[in-house]
Length: 204
Image 1 (cartoon, rainbow, N blue to C red):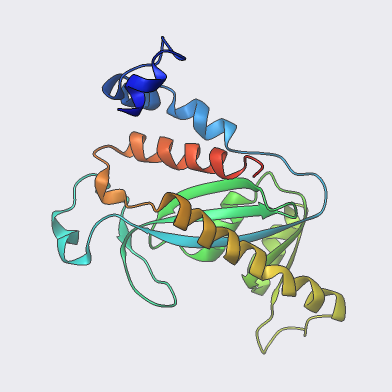
Image 2: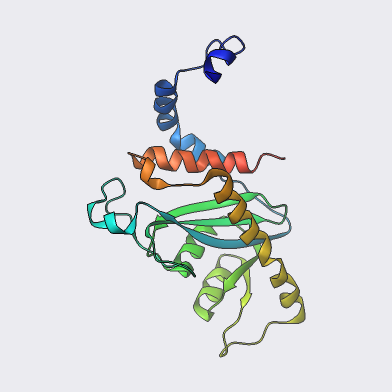
């Protein structure tokens, strides 16, 4: 109904099936456009699981076969992928990566932060990860473990901003509510995630 009403203003607007074809065709372009460079301020990093299907159907799942795996979060253990997000100080998503659900957080952080210089605020830190990120020109600020040097007063102040990315992830999932089970191809799913990030970054 909405398409029929808007057809007068957008005469070249494609129908739904053609729109889906165009979305898949330009998936790489959407993925590139959703990656932004941020050269000022600090960055925040976190990840969130993207369930591919109900856990009971994990053995029969096909769309993300070979990529989907069991992942862990603070509340549940879904079967699917993991979305790694980097948030800028201005609360815009600058970088993201979609990985297998069982990819270790440290490996995900190293991959998604390849093009991000400066200070990055994370959830938990480790000596190997901190060293790896230093080699990339990054300073990691995270809650240190008992066997590590305690956080400085400045680091503790920065860590209070961790709630910004947790709020952003909550808003992102509430707005776009990704249920990967509705997709029948990986390309279509990745294109939709890229478009959602582009929409998320539009000033409200």
